[in-house]
Amino acid sequence: MSPEEMKKFMGPALAKSAVLSLAFGFLFAWFYGRFHGALWVAGGGPLAAMEFATVLWVPILLAMVGSSVWYMKVKSLQMATCWAWLIRMNAAGIAVGLLMR
Image (cartoon, rainbow, N blue to C red):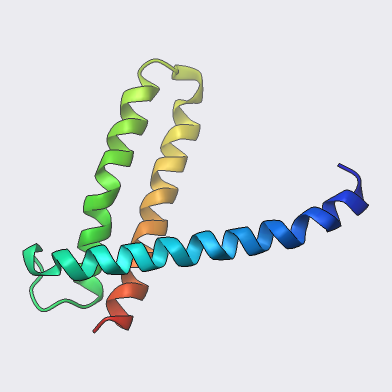
């Protein structure tokens, strides 16, 4: 893309990213609100939301580990993506846990 096309592309891309982030946040908060009573960490808060986020992350871990068995050349890239998702999920958990306290 040329620099002018990139400038035209960035506005809608940023708006789409913001909408998707808010949608993920609202869904995460709603699911956390529904399931926070079933978590090991009692009383809610950031630690309980981080536990919930990590439980949601486990299928991503299993998918990354399972697919890296077949694609050995990209295993390090997939594991980096896997750990990046854990960090994102826990950051969302901290934010939701603090806001819903």
